[in-house]
Length: 546
Picture 1 (cartoon, rainbow, N blue to C red):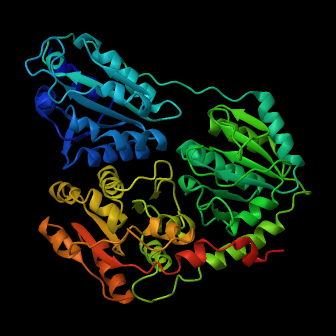
Picture 2 (cartoon, rainbow, N blue to C red):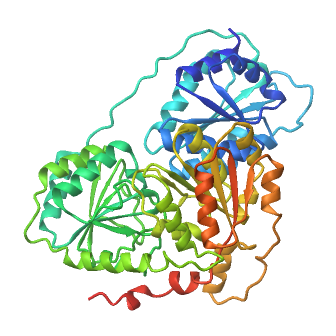
Picture 3 (cartoon, one colour):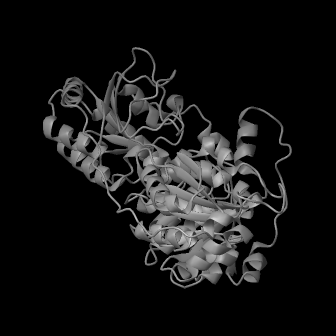
């Protein structure tokens, strides 16, 4: 069997459905082997788009998404998606080509040390030097990519290795059970929770797993302990729950932080230091229980008193069985905070000014989408508005990146989401800056008949940095630009361009797009004038919760 055929056979054995990417001369054997495979090639217009799609596939399925590039410039274009997957704990396999390693007729043309380049960005990076090793390297790559903490892996297949003869042995896919936390640590955690006066549950990125979601929902129902989440922990428990206090979209000085400051014990489930801290620990202020697959990384603002290390779902299930609701618990202050948070977040939901406020947009999208509808975000200041104001009814229905926080990922993430869940509504929200970084993938979406909506928040500037610039007192400088006509731009790709002229017009267009096949691009003017006054204010002073 040819080595490239063996490679594709090994990928089929792992259940791979798609390979996203752009082949090059050095991948032609792989491409020919893929031609007769059950795996579908999604040809993209840039390797970065392919990488973001593969990472999102991994995020939503728990199985590594696979992307493909050639050597040199193709491989360097995967650097940002590699970091995106690695920091965001998304399982992904990158396959890159390379010139022949046994002999070369082209000197060093296009050759860089790709394996070395990916050392700091992956859990594993290897050059395949013998076709017989392909099955074991593929199996090991998939195992490592999925093992907690999930992330990116990379295999380089040189041109001469791909075309050589190899065996046909394939390794059976074998799963494994994660170890439980020690009984002693579970008992200590249960005792700390029962002895606390006002315990509070925090749900982080590492808890965004199906089994953990079910376990946490049962824990909240059993104990009645209020909860909040991080940006990447949104939707793990239905946020319509009466005990949900909100999302820690900012690190400090938000209404929600009144509740955090009041807690004498925080049960922190799935905390990942990659996310911005959802709260700052202070010596002697409160105790923290860290429940995760691995121990806490201690730093100046996070130094938990107890680590419960093991399978998160098992740990939470054990605690739900052990912890009895205590008469001494007092959650009345949390409920007052919840009322203030809800009032604050809903304040501009019905404001119909145009250009549209981001709070109004969040509300309109939430009302129009079903429970399982998916919103994917690029990176910009609107991400904070969605994190704080968008109520998730199910896990992984608001896909935002609070790890690498890169621009350009929103559109490819939406495309991958729709491929995985073709019967669910998918809406991508991008700033004009982030959209233009991978806007060429509109052609990929149209060609593959991916029915989705892309909303471009148009303020002709890098709004997030502008907000930060204003916040530190600098003059407005260097962040404004001009945009193309996005309606004509969308039409030129075969997509459907729309430009609302009022709040009512947007609602009409959005409803039409939700119920009409095709790729729809909505060019929406946005009003960010309230960003500074609302997001930067010392809310602990203005909230006046006593």
